[in-house]
Amino acid sequence: MHRIAIAGASGRMGRMLIEGVRGADDCQLAGALDIAASPAIEADAGAFLGVNTGVPIVADLRGGLKNAQVLIDFTRPEGTLAHLAACRELGVQAVIGTTGFSDAQKGEIAEFAKDIAIVLAPNFSVGVNVTFKLLEMAAKALSTGYDIEIIEAHHRHKVDAPSGTALKMGEVIADALGRDLKDCAVYAREGITGERDPSTIGFSAIRGGDIVGDHTVLFAGIGERIEITHKSASRATYVQGSLRAVRFLADKKAGLFDMSDVLGLK
Image (cartoon, rainbow, N blue to C red; front, side, top):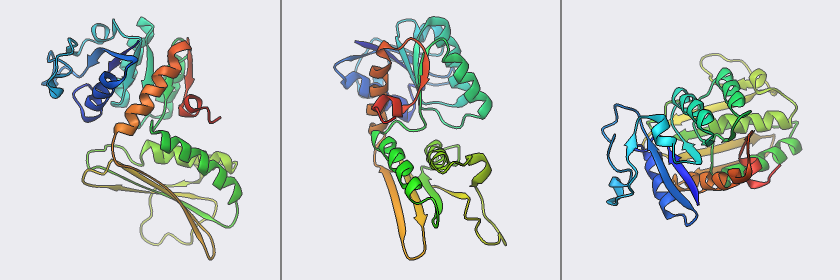
């Protein structure tokens, strides 16, 4: 059995992860974490399902991780880094779906990965990660004569933009074209911008309602357009991808991996 702790246990994603772990024959809920201010602290992690798991939601990291082999974390960057410090201390692996990390914070994660095994991905949907591979192929074939724009839409509560998935799409495309996304990304247009620089990759972010996550990459040429789109209708896809990552880590001691490693797409 894979003994799993869930961070952000009382949030939307945390609850779906708890439900997913409970529904998997080879997984066991071993811990549930949340911030001290959460009204769910000390409540049973399965209370929202009307079941008693025997696992309370706690703010104490070491207490919440002591029985776990792996932590699944879809929270905020600062919280995730604190969680990883505790994971390293206790020898707990980590599956990280948090987005919005700075380059310095990504460097901290790489340091943690020298001691524990981590899967870090901006999106754990299997379909999205297959889409990354399709984008790599398309970018290489459409390297000249096509303008590239990435459009993403998410729910009103999302706090970072562009989404981590959109940025990953940009990185995949830029790498395939031999470019650095930092040098060619355009995140905003307003006023008299002049003609489009054909070497750029544009981003547009939409926020509203309860949109789970829509991403479209547009390759716009003369006389034709190619659109590669992925739409998420439920966060359940992220749960199943996360559990695949947990299983992938079962025989890993240390290292930083992503979903391409988990799915064998490299």
